[in-house]
Picture (cartoon, one colour):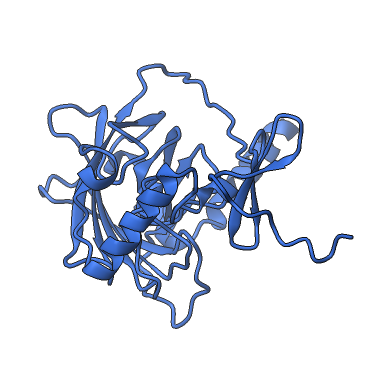
Length: 277
C-alpha cells in the first residue's frame, strides 16, 4: 500500500512540474513518426547528395570564392587539406552537418527537437517553443536554430518542421571537397523536414543556404532512409582515435606509423622549430 501511495505521489509531482504549455499541448501522436535510426541516401561527403563531388556540385559561387574553391581542390590533390577543417576533429558546422554522415536519431520533445548525429560534435538543438531570436548569441559552428512544426494539409497533425539557423562561426565548408562559405560568417540556413508521401521510411530535408559566397540562395533536397531493424546498431565514432593529422601553425602534417612527423605534400617545409635546440 505504501509503495502504491509513493508511486501516486511521484506521478502527481511529475504532472505538477510540467510547464502548462507542455501539459496541455504535447501529444506525440500529433507529430510525424521519426523514431529509429536514419541514414543518408546518396553521398554523405557531398553537400548535394545527388550530384558528384567537387566541381560536379555546381555550387553557385561568386568569382572570389570560386577561385578559393579551385585553389583548395589543387591543394587537396597535392596532399593538403584545402579549405575543409574537419581533419582536426572539430565539428563540420552548419550547413555541412545536414549531410548526415553518421547514423541519425531525431528526438521530439515539447519545446525542442534534437537531431543527434553519430559523428564528431554534430548534435543539434532546435528550439520549437515559440521563442524569438535572442538579442545576442555566442557564435558556434552549429549556430542557433529556431524551428516551427506546421500542419500543411489541415488534418490536425504536424507534417513539416521548418528550421532557421543563424549565429555561426568558422572555419566551415559545405562538404569534404572544400566548397567555401564566406568568411564574414553571416550564413543563414533554412530547412524543411518532412516524410515522403509515398514512403514513411524516407525523410526529406530541403536545405537552403543564404551566404555572401554565393550568387544566389543554394537549395538542395537531401533524403534519409529509416533502418528497418527495430534495434539498429549504433556505432561509436571517436574522431581523435587513430587520427594521424597534425596541425602546426597554419600547416598540416601527418604522423608516420612509427610516430614521426612527416609532410603531406611534396617539398613541404618542416615546421618552425625555434623553441627546440
